[in-house]
Image 1 (cartoon, rainbow, N blue to C red):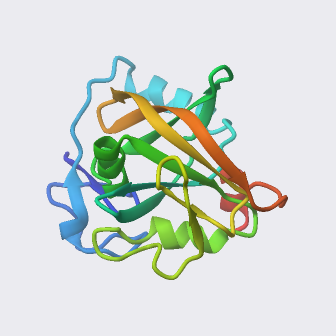
Image 2: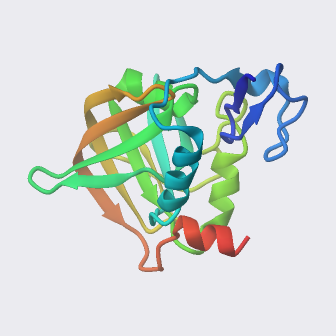
Length: 201
């Protein structure tokens, strides 16, 4: 059975052809791409059991942004983490088919706006539509990063800028490891976590 991924929201579907409509964000079949099958050394039952354990990992929610040829784009992610202190380094994993991933690969920079509990509307704004169709930043207030030019959303907790030092191919995703070069704080609200978002929908 083939696997298909929605390039707008990340929903995955199994079938001989892509679905007529994404049940999550509503886009049509032209927004689905065939997922490359990557060999897994674990038996299905064992893999599913381990995957269940990984659901206990705590995640934050972020808007990852970038700029290319003066065009801005951003997407929702829960994979941003700090990985070193001296110098400050952080990483993020983005799906290969996303426009933001394309921008980061070509520009070598990304920004991270950290979401608070009051930023629920930004999750649907950046997660349920594609930058290939709309300018996601057109109606929002943001600053332009002094070091990278990436946009940072003013209604979020804070914003950091990163310059990519290494890109790792993970099959369906790229991991971008970046040096943190600047940042600004905007709010002291509590951070949005993936668990909080799921339990308060």
